[in-house]
Length: 110
Image 1: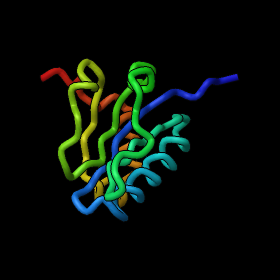
Image 2: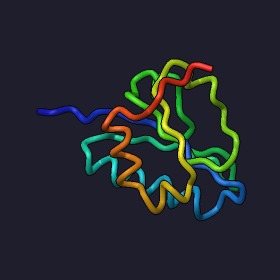
Image 3: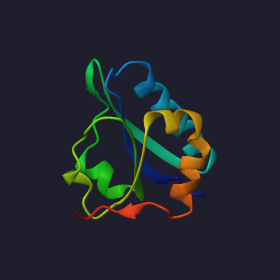
Image 4: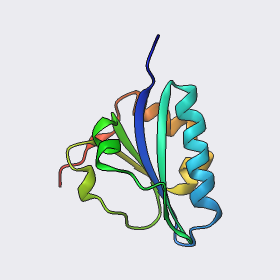
């Protein structure tokens, strides 16, 4: 039995309403299609939901950020991170996940 590979991500936009949640749902859908379990933290108008834990981040092969606002980055130090806008995640979700699968995320090491 193949175990699903793990990804984590954050979706956030300035208004924090539709784009945040649609971006998260779109990325989850395409991650699953590529054999990944993707946990998305949403930073929306209602605050942070589904917050990533240290364990989530440690177990993840990569991080996908669909953000138009600042997010806490230090927690991702040393992990491959791919950052796109929430609109890119919504309209090019499959290509965004394909970039992760292809190893295009760069290690975050400021």
